[in-house]
Length: 191
Image (tube, rainbow, N blue to C red; front, side, top):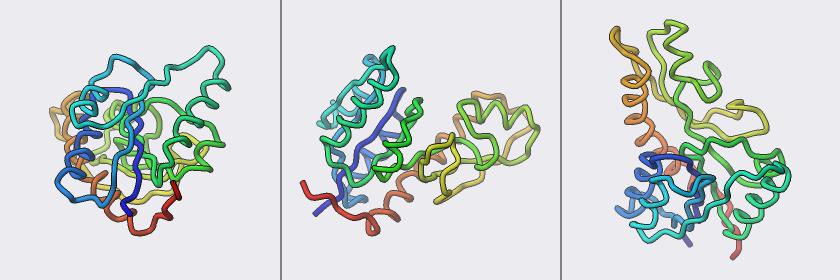
């Protein structure tokens, strides 16, 4: 039985597309059962729909506790073996991150530069090397156990955009390789 994957994403979807492509090529013994976004008009939803993957939108609500319950219920309904943050720009509740097997791809070499502005923070710090990290998500912000990392050199003429684009290229193969590594270790949920 193939593992059930749920992808959470908030933007363009290039990272999600790398997972979709790997699954379609047969590189992942897994089924992407849904792509969920907190934003209704993002490209990642179009990419998923084009691939025939069900999509769901759970927009942020004024009552954060209510939103937490709704996103938890939606993901639980899908019975994932692994939840993957592919550019999902929301912090999920401690209940969520302890109940689901949940990984995130972050554009820095954690524990350095956690948070939403990792690439900018790396440039401002003047580091010569940054990179990408896939880690388990816990109740902190980018504090979960590191699974895999890949380095990316900072070039002298890099700005935030150019560096981030090169990190994104590395992230695409890193997330697929990490999922491949994790799949045999996951307990399958009965559906």
